[in-house]
Length: 194
Image 1 (tube, helix red, strand yellow):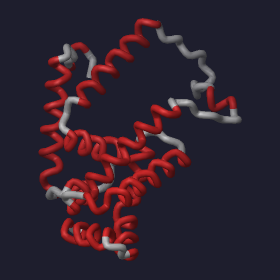
Image 2: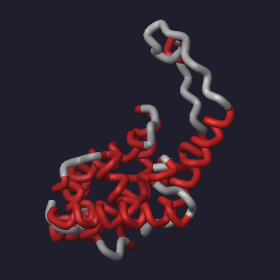
Image 3: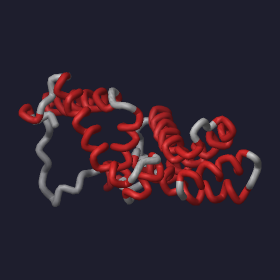
């Protein structure tokens, strides 16, 4: 859908047009679900995030200030709902198959990681997410779409309301900003931290 078509569909859906609503769900449903699954949620939890995201849209449909940018609004909402669900449920994965809990090491005995290595990895991850949180919301959405979800650039352009040709340069600027934030926090490629 073109941005003007999205805006028209949002307005029509807000006025009660079911066909317009169906067009929005058809146009952005895959994106919403992909963002949820990119957070490594189970299929059931990803479906819950998807449903909650669409519910949030229903609740706010008449308050969307830039309806042509609905894709970005949905992506942000899906990301927030995914994070909310992760906080609620933690990272527990229940399984009846205990063999899935063992690493596939080809029969070799794995070398245990030292507590220092574990702590260094946790510190690196913490710093990376802190730097990521320091990026603009637009950069966060773009990097999440490009790196994690990885849909075609045409879909990303539609979601963000930008030309396809500007995705690469914008991505490069966002990654450069992330590198500078990491460097300011003492992480450099020379230290092997990223």
